[in-house]
Image 1: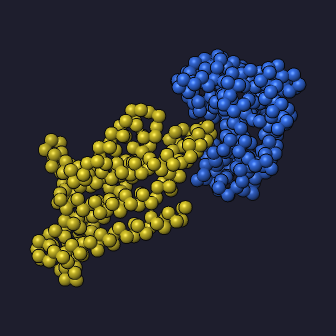
Image 2 (image 1 turned 90 degrees about the vertical axis):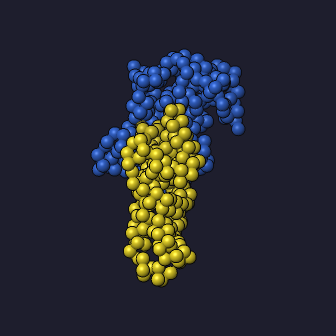
Image 3 (image 1 turned 135 degrees about the horizontal axis):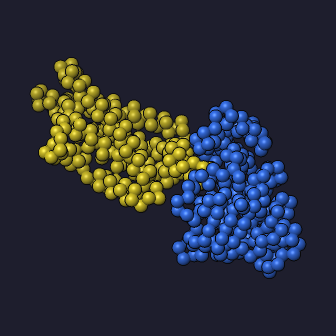
Length: 245
Length: 212
């Protein structure tokens, strides 16, 4: 079974039709990059996958469970689908280490010593073991985003959604974050959906690239195919703007 | 003032005790009840929001004396007999919790919504997110107004005098009627109230500085 399946998904904000006839399948282990102009619905689409946004019709099956069904336990889905936000959303009242350890402790009931060991391992992996006892307000944006990634990884999810993870960062911080993401994409069997404008990253790690505009998926291609021969005129325009800016 | 103190220290001490006990009980319960209604106000459930709204609007806008009289004079007629202290403390709790609910709600709403989203996306339930992430930050933000509520609560506990609650104000009335020394009776009690409320003010200011 596929990890994520959209079947004719519609999403409205009042009268505004935010997602139109979305059909999309992501297999386990796949890395998919989602691009498109602002307001195209890519953030909304990514946020429907863990139920932060509800869909109004269609079927959205994540890890075997239908999110359109009001009886579906969202917490169970969120245990398996992590999310990394544009603005990190680290817990401001907890230290870096506690940010990573909180959910595994109270959601997964992981043993304290094991929890701490894994958290330190992850901090080490993202290059921030020395910041374990700092508060989120004491570290830079790029560091905060790497902590947020470690926090998601600590749940050992099957899928990880990145919603513009580098858009709020200073340019010199972006590479560190992308580096961590590349490692995850290459080394793990996690399904990754990345909403981003980083075309270099997309070229290097994505299996597929999806282009959205006006709430619709206009193009869904293998990465090389997409960059070399974009079919849609709007995708071509978008690419030329974003690459030659 | 010295004569009042030396002649009536026993009554004053009793009054101080009841005032303190009533204030502490009302403080604990109105913090719990107020926080609960504050959380109800920010849930997705329309029923919970409506219930909280109604409670807050009613008890915030009725004089404390009316609420307390209701418990002291009306409830005993139909339900169960309550003494003055209990009626006063219940009235105080209900009244104060409405204000604390508003204060805590404003605190919760000042916390970046991203904190809740981050917590939910991380797998926490609404209540886990509230207790571990949102409330600790919300309380920190509302320490100054919460301190005001605590000071008000101690002062408002003088409502007990009206329902024979044996508190400081009640003792002051008694001492004044016995000694006819109204000025000094009420001055002594005023000072005793200050002794309770000033440390609260200072402690809240200290907390505010330390946690800011």
